[in-house]
Length: 389
Image 1 (cartoon, rainbow, N blue to C red):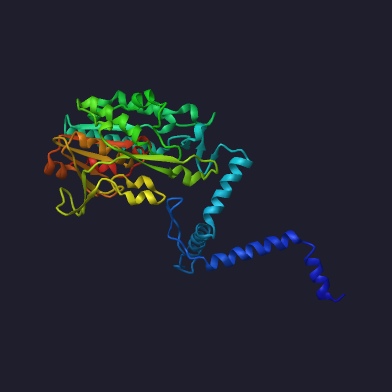
Image 2: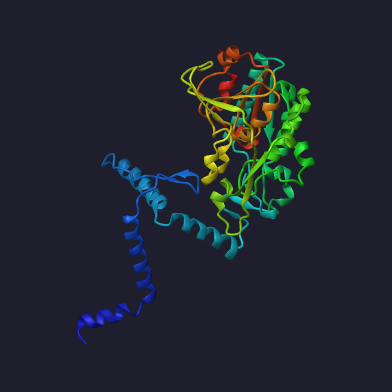
């Protein structure tokens, strides 16, 4: 037997090595021919693009290889399937009660993992409370603060046993005890707890459901002496097979999809083009819901057409209200059409100005600051509400 035959025979003695070599070679070729994606709809995240080498220095090379490693990871062929496989192995084979930073609880509920409140979150919480306090001082009698508890606070029995979570309930109770400093603090935890046997939070997403928002809205109406929206007088529409943000991270194979409910209201929504403080003149008028979003992965974005800087809804009531919010308010705000003639909505992620000129231009009867607890403690933009002028 010649040397070439001996070498070939020795190679075939390692079939596992051959299989792995062929597998990674095939994956490499597949990566080369698969177009890069800018966005992962399933994970609801922007994917890294191929980096360029900025300099040949040690620092430049280090940054390039770090960015390139992330690029290869983000753009690997079949990424969605690999993420799903990893989750299946972790939860079914290794019997883990968490995956992708998400706690996997009872009743198919998924919870964000918050083992402790970070120093920057403590500072953010204090800064944002100070902003609301400043707003309440400038507009006495008109400011209302609603902080929505996480699902883990309402359903602690469904959180995996022994999973350490921050004392969110205690923090909210502390804010409630100083409620007058923030205008009116509308404590929605009792109302949500009273109805916890109902479908108040999505299983696979971090938001509350339209029903959970309704019970909080009822509390708002009771506090201000308003007559609540009559759900029985309106048509409820549903969309099945909603998988939310928690599922994007956990991707468990036995996840139970959610149902989105919304009310078929004819009210107009104007999304303004914001270029300065105060009331803009230009905007695009449409309906309350972007129903086209029900055909894509991020279905919750259908409420109010997402998180626009400044919007106005024409309601069926009297007076005006300004809602300063995160995305939890998106399914809450439509109920306010029963109470106000104009409902203005500001999302500071896309509104880069203070509020005083806008308030002066519109003379609102009420201001409502509505945030989930989780985003309130870390929102870097809400400070603008506290800036006078």
